Length: 205
Image (cartoon, rainbow, N blue to C red; front, top):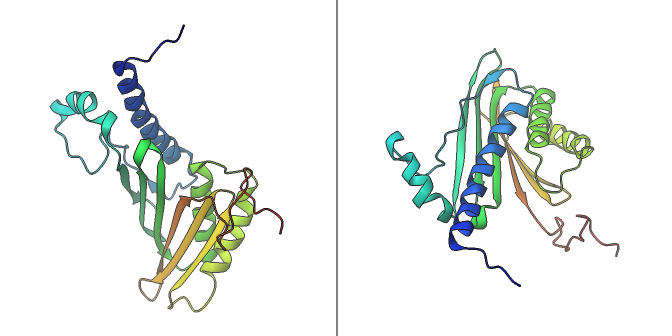
């Protein structure tokens, strides 16, 4: 005998995906080794919605299961010298699947420090396909990119690790500070457009 899921069960399952995505963001905030900043609590309601506290329960009941583009943008508060700006933007798309993660840091021009913090942020995100030892290759690429060319110039580069596509952007802020941004999305192709296999690798030619 076949049992069909009720509409109520389907709606509850979709709502649970929003809750799970918020919990993923909250775990990432707690798991990123970045003691130089303090993060705010992850809001109950994702952006772009602005909901009064007394209406939150109704929003979760009527709207949460059916949203298809939403996210959480968080701005950390620096608590030590050297770091002046840290913002993270998690976005989710159709079917409540991961869409992108942006991390932006402004600090004194210290490529080694920035490469380490960005690599740790990517590691803590634990995106689909991420492997424990991927952090070494990512860190090396980040350091090479951030440390390349005069710090007063802009730098942009791409990297792939498994199914994760990384874009690094570096640009000057002042004579002593630089901005770096690491964008993470999922991909099924290599940088040259070659389809990846089920292990996230380019098949041999």
